[in-house]
Image (tube, rainbow, N blue to C red; front, side, top):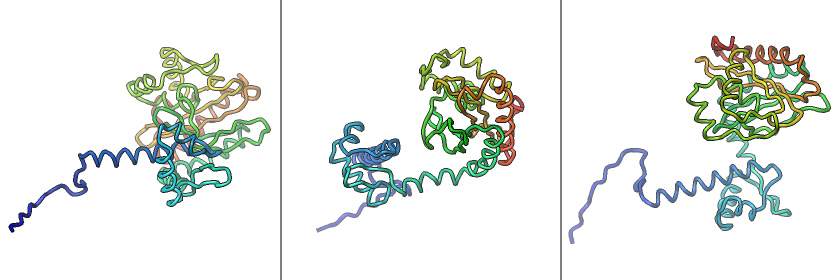
Length: 280
């Protein structure tokens, strides 16, 4: 009997059959797993297995298998009495690696505290992800009536101070792509839902150096925000100062706008960044 040995050469790092159906199945499993974890992270009160199955359109058996694997790895945990699943400590650890990598969060904190002391309103730090604002740090006001957002929560880019501050620093083509994809949903009577009006406001933001959310996402809430820039003059985040309209009255807008712009510039400087000429 003759045995024929065939040498198969492939590039390093490319698994055998990477273009096969089996490879596609593995990618699909990973997508399902991460989608499940993301959905669970959006529910701080926990979720039932059946609800996860329904909302994600996955068989209950598949969801249970994924949850069990995540539980073994400490990415999720379960309350057996209520049957609720929550994100676990490992999820926080992995997510926190992003903040460790982008040390502007730690650098911004003392400046945010100082701004709260100066102005008496809550200060938030946000970034843009997938065309939405994501809040990643907050220093709360000591006022009884104050704005509080859950870290990791999202806000529409066109109806928030942070979003408009960062949109104003983006190239026009990127702004167009985001608006075409996300649209201009109307949340209150003050929401800007016309592209031409929004672009006109973004031009004003570029001139004055700060953006204003005037009850555009929530009635009774006002917010001023200004971007933080990297060494290339590109916005990597923005800080906002938010509070009830009863305290952030018209005559305070210029004062608060200048304060937020100055604080953003100080954070930019601390990072070794550069404020573009139009924002100076």
